[in-house]
Image 1: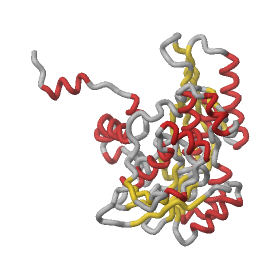
Image 2 (image 1 turned 90 degrees about the vertical axis):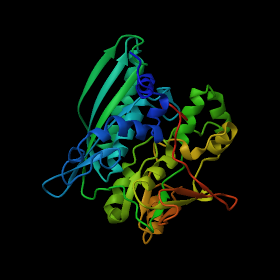
Image 3 (image 1 turned 120 degrees about the vertical axis):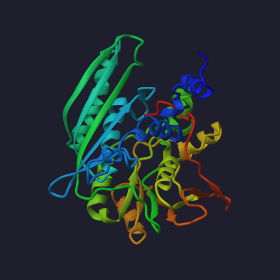
Length: 359
């Protein structure tokens, strides 16, 4: 039987790497396969936040007025060992940070590890030790998990899935407000630059470009976010860690969900010199590269300068105001960057396969 053109297109479609990039394609495939098929009432627990509001986790209201924060993530980074960390430290830090960005104090993790047959026990021990070292230093409990082995060739080395649990007195609902200032806590793009260079076989260039100083920025952000939330929680209107899709991805998601425009200054965005030179060499925009130890905040303008100074006192010397949130009928839902030469350009949402398996 001859099928219609539409049926042929659907049958011939396949999942591509770009669908997992965290950009436009990811949002489109999730909307098509999942979000559009779930009753709005089932997208969240009443009074909380769920997949009705695209974030890295969910908020569940508790009887005492606080919120349970829950997040889940899978880690497939390639290579699994990299300067500054490995898939174990990445999984622990990334999940803790997802809890923190929703205003939660992490209290527990669960993990699921799937390993390929033939994987070296010594490497697995190193990865697990790194994972445990992070949660021990953060005082977070490991309360459950799963371990499975797949036949050789049926999974690429190792995949780690983690669930993070936290408690929030002041949840962050990711709704930037007009007049807010956009703040980043540190250099952006370090993790993405390192992983991309390793994937391209440019290990020696990492050392040449930065004299050994360039490494992944992977780390938990509790020593930044918990004091910030306690002191300025009422003024933090949005918070994200710019992982897949980088800074551009975070800002693009914020403007897509509100009738706002975000204007950022290129000169104000902190980028490590080695990362900037590497990106220039390969024609890559560092604003799309992942960071695994950076917070992006939308803060009430009345306290923005004070917040930056406080962040610096906590050890985040590179914290900066990089832009602001505005209203504009003409440019709403856009991110606009004032360039170093004084012009303006639209910062497009991330799309394509810039760095697959970055986290």
